[in-house]
Image (tube, rainbow, N blue to C red; front, side, top):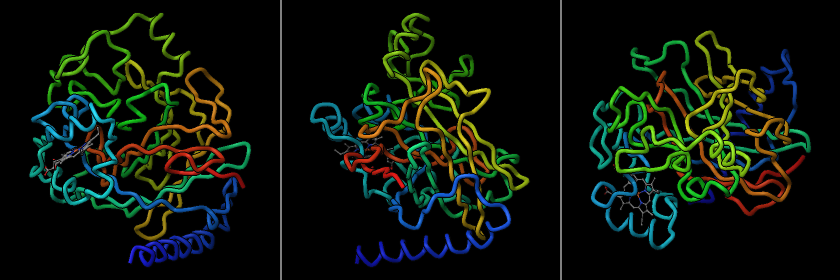
Length: 326
Ligand code: HEC
């Protein structure tokens, strides 16, 4: 049964590639990758409500046993949640354990996301495909129907290795449960603060020199994003997260969008070598840790779909996703 489903998946994506290739003849992509030979990872992303890092670590908010197994027994989120789609799908409707004061039912709680990754010795390429979702006539961001983001860190960011996105999602950020409106905090890592409580790290910032040292130790998350525009285009966006989210003025990533009916197909690529302190060198044999986020149906801010933690490794199968050369 599982093998059957996987075959269908592979067939499905091959068909999509054929259709896209036919459309693509007029405008050849700058970097041609043969996606037909690259494994497709069919994962799901779900709406997490206001379940912050602090929420998942607090017994009684998150299931007590889950917290114990995560904190004391070293079990990562995927250990329990790899197949828990139904459980996580109800957060969007407000029926989950995770808080969601603005439940919605005209968008799904879970979206299937197909992920592929490859490199050609010069650049690394991600390819994402998923079904466009309706905004129900009520987009939060009418200019951007969708955004897909991959973020990653070296193993210096321990919480990213254990919990992906949750390492950067705190209870006092914009729109979260402990947001006071006064702070307007974007995503940050715990190491950027001198103190963190159940409501997050607030403005307990470490000094500039301490933050600079964290960056030189590789203690930050890098992110690459393809931001779809209402006129059918796509914008490259990248940056890093430490004491807040920093968006680059001149992104190093390149993006391409090919829409095939309701299917959105996006590639994001960047040179393997990082050209700044806050751009990670992607080296053969190394493993990187992070996850994926999808804003679909015209959503913005925290109203995205996220994955649990995923790792990828260049030229090796040590991570969840092997990024092999071609
Ligand atoms: C030992 C297993 C286990 C681990 C490890 C674990 N969880 Fe959970 N998680 C659960 C269980 C059990 C529930 C509650 C199920 C229910 O509500 O019926 C839950 C609930 C949740 C919910 C709320 C679901 C809802 O319907 O509202 C979220 C979000 C969540 N977990 C995220 C995480 C994240 C993020 C991590 C890693 C930091 C993690 N979990 C680690 C077992 C686990």
